[in-house]
Amino acid sequence: MSLLLPSALAISRSQPFLLLQSSTAQSCLPILRHIVSRPGANTQEHIVVFCFLYAPSSFTSKAQLESENIRVYDWTGRIPGYSECPDTRAELLQAIRAGEFATFVCLKRRDSCNRSTAPPGPLSVIVDSVDTLFSDLGSLANTEQLLSEVLATTRGRNDASRLIVHALAPSPLIPLLTQTRFSPTLTHLTAHPPVLVAHLATAYLTPPPPLSSPEKFWRVFLPIAERHYESERLVFGAGGEGCGGKELVVEVLVRGPDASARRRGLERVLEGWSGDKNGGPCALKDLESLKSVWTRKVVEENVPDPTQNLSFNLNLTPEQQQSRAKVPLPYAHEGLNFPVPGQAHEHRNNPAAILYDPDSADDIDDDDPDEDLDI
Image (cartoon, rainbow, N blue to C red; front, top):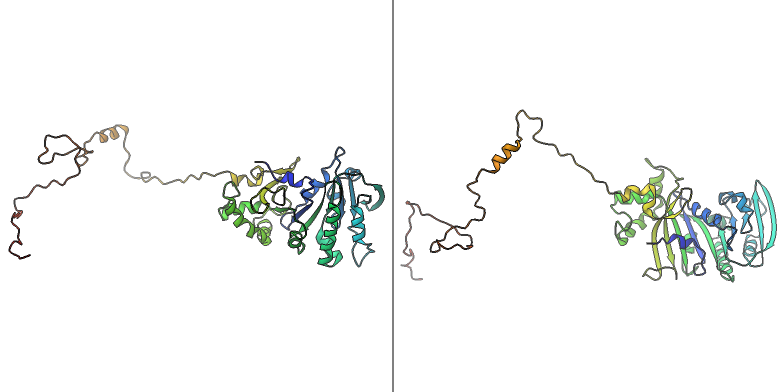
């Protein structure tokens, strides 16, 4: 079965909105870093990154930042009340128009501004932290309205374009951004720690599909995954390995024309993300941290031998076993037929019968003892 995650990461006109959801237990930044660093010189896709929380170097190298396909706005230094903050809404909408780009790249605290005509082609607009944007604007309604305008402007381009936002759960923006009122189509990628899947397989006896039915797994997985303290306890609690692992489990939710599920165009799967040198989407069974879930362990129980450590021998030699097998048992008839009165010379399969030999002391009277009663 083919993976859904590669197609979810690819730019598509039918899926203009991509939501990346992280948590304290598991970050989604490796996927965001993969999206930013993927375009090369031989592709027509252009990427505009708005950095509100993370430095541009967190997503790509210095050489890639100088590429014509990537434009980065470093707004991490814009702190309301502590620095002069221009109109974020006007600059953000201006940056994604087809006419021109404004590039603000911060490398080693040196700002460079360059305006150039944006060539036509696919465009990906990335907001690295909508929670920081919400904190800067100070209003949930204004943040939702701004993102809605950005999405509408992105959809209005002639070429396939999309809006990619990154949120840290629990966030008040996630329920608003996942509603059909904001966007009828949605690609929602949620990062989970692999230890959560291993915990469900051992504690709840519910491994991921196909080891268990999808209905049973999602009925157990979704409520526990929404309780973020469960994942934090498994990652940071006693016996936890902490965050920062190279592998992660990705919950892929696709709503819209690209979904192939039966329920209102909705498809939900669980896939893996490898953190090796050539990291990227992979199947769950390919994750090293989940090998124990897919490998059935055969437990050999050592049953004590009652014939050991005795002062006498209870075992038989092979000769003794053969001699014992040759002894005829008087009560083992082995299905032999017995003669029935009147059929002594007939050899046939007779049903079971009770053979009774009267004793001399038996009082057998052929007369009816109740013949004197008027019944």
